[in-house]
Image 1 (cartoon, one colour):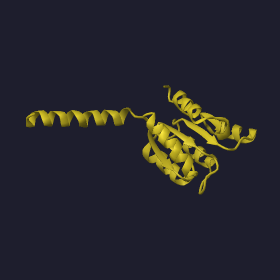
Image 2 (image 1 turned 60 degrees about the vertical axis):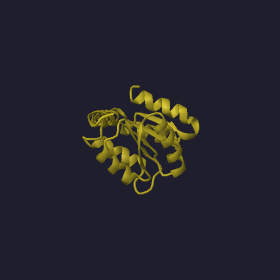
Image 3 (image 1 turned 135 degrees about the vertical axis):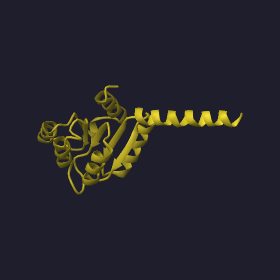
Image 4 (image 1 turned 90 degrees about the vertical axis):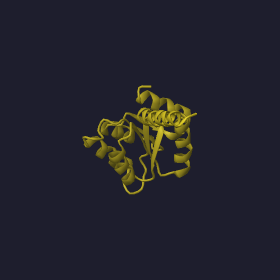
Length: 145
C-alpha cells in the first residue's frame, strides 16, 4: 500500500466517522439512580444511540440546552431541580421545546401523569410497569424509527 492509498483510506474513515456521528441519534437520560442510568445507557449504546447522562435536574437542563439531544428520558424525582421543573423549562425554551421527552419514573399517581402530559411530555412510563426492551420500543416510536 502506498502513501496515497493510506491517505485515501484515512480520509474515507474520517468522512464515515463524521456521517455516523450526524446520523446517530442522541438521547439524554436525566436520572439520579446511577445503576439504572448505566444499565440503560449501555442498552441504548448497543442499539446504536449516543447517550448523554445527567444525575440531577439542573445539569440535565444544561445538557439539553447545550447538546440538543434528539430525545430526553426524564425521571421526575431528581435532586436540585425536579423533573416537572425541568420539563416546564424545556418546553418554554425555543431551542428545546420540540425535543420529545419521555417520562420514566416511579410516580404513578394520576395527578402526576396528567401534570407531565400537560407540561408537554411525549409519553409517561412508570418504571415498574415496563421492561427495558419496552422502553427502547417507546423511544424508537417517539423518534419515528
